[in-house]
Picture 1: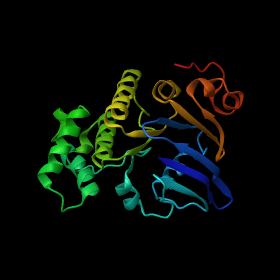
Picture 2: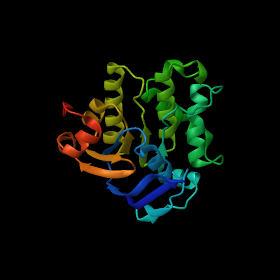
Picture 3: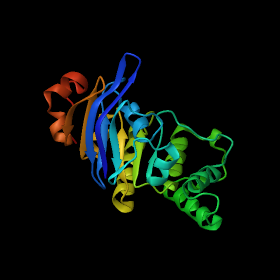
Picture 4: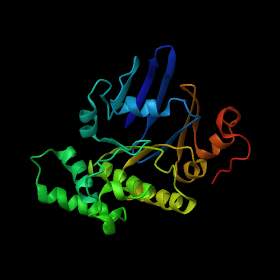
Length: 243
């Protein structure tokens, strides 16, 4: 589905991503983990076209998307959320999600159909009671739900989630994990998450990529990663449980 080969990106003398290669298969739930500054968000920005690599290629279903513009990559089927929630604060929840649908299909699409899709997503993500609330008046949890609903309105085949669970309490994290599993299993959407909450990563993902100073230092299942000495020394520390 997604093939990243030899991806490199520098900012001056800082090599943010260094010869990174990995493959993601359909319907996987993948995590990219590592300390702050490891290159995780830069990798997302390269995949989604917000940045262009110095070297390397990105293929999506066999098509080279390395030099495509962000909107072209979006319409090819790659959506994302951001580490810092990005939203239109003066839009209602319904208007915000509808914008995502329009962005995917364009203004010539059937408006009634797009509205129905927006309503379905609002209900699916538990936002029905907030439908007419301005986004600026929502809690951070609900803002993240709106951003996720808006990303899903793009009808992605692959969804990139950048620290979606940051700031959530344990109960909210568990709820988010179950929601993402449902999106993956029922809707067939492949997920790549950047996440620091290791309990969530271990419960959600079946494929983990570990980055450190821009390089991939390990890749494998949660069990393999939780017992990898290089990963423990670089990032996890002792005593991380596999769940």
